[in-house]
Amino acid sequence: MRKLREVLRLRFELKLGYQQIGRSCSIGVSTVHKYLKRAEAAGVTWPLPEDWDEARVDAVVFPPGKQPSRSTTRRARRPTSPRSTSSCAAAST
Image (cartoon, rainbow, N blue to C red; front, side, top):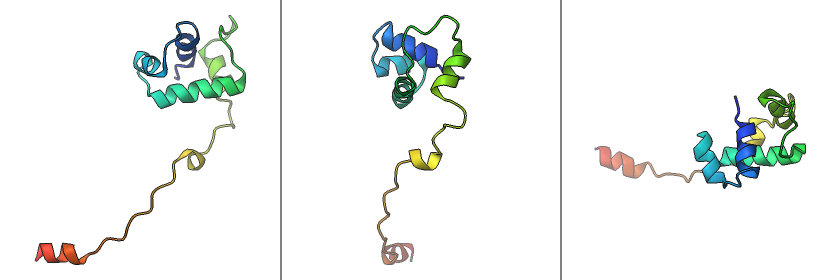
């Protein structure tokens, strides 16, 4: 399960930075960034309403059917440079 509630609490209540939050929650800095950006886009504010549990926060920040596809979130690969096979062939003989 995601640690959204804890990430939000650490950021807005304790004013921790992304790296500190990542270490505290054992998640990557990019994940902290993603959680906070998605919470902001969803209009989630701190403190959360009292009746919101982790599942409710998760459903609001990551609504079903609204997940970006992996193909749109991946970075473009760098083109590979052509390699000369003659040096490999010469080294193996």
